[in-house]
Image (cartoon, rainbow, N blue to C red; front, side, top):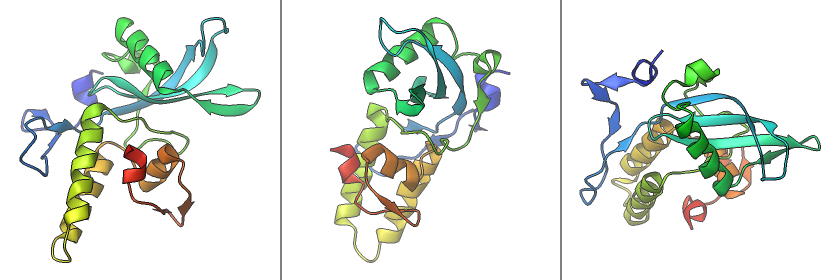
Amino acid sequence: MSISDLCIAEDDGMNWFGNISSDSDQPIAAACLMQGHWRHRPHPYAEPVLCRVVIDVAEPRVVAAQFLSDGIAEDLDDGALDDLTQSFVRQDVMYNPSAWGFTPCNVLPGWARPSFSEQQIEELKRIEGYLIEATDDNIDEVLRVRDEFLRGIGVTDHHLARASGEPEYGGTVVSKPSRLLS
């Protein structure tokens, strides 16, 4: 199974999101998420430990990863995610993830604390700017675009709360998304 088989195709190419603003000429690719397990050294002197990992083969990058330390799940930090991404690219994991035991997932697993690419952060900030300036007449449209963008990269309000460390009540994030991006 190839990456093109795993990712949703539209118009003979990737399923791209239309940007909501005209000041960006770089469309954001929909995520093509896969999850699996991998042995990784959390630091240079440690023994490799089994991690659960989510990758986005459309970018390609590691979106989230965790390992168990003394029975407690610990998220890998951004530096470790970058190292793991480089390792996956060197070993061609990103180009044939199913051969390495990774399986497709439409949404990040509940345990995942997502990381965002620079383009995704820029798009979220752009959408946040529209939310700030929204009126009663167009707020629903801006929220729809925001939700569609987040859904396309596999992120839910639960994941936003987890990424920002914010409390979550009844499936709704309590604070504005700007807390996540600052």
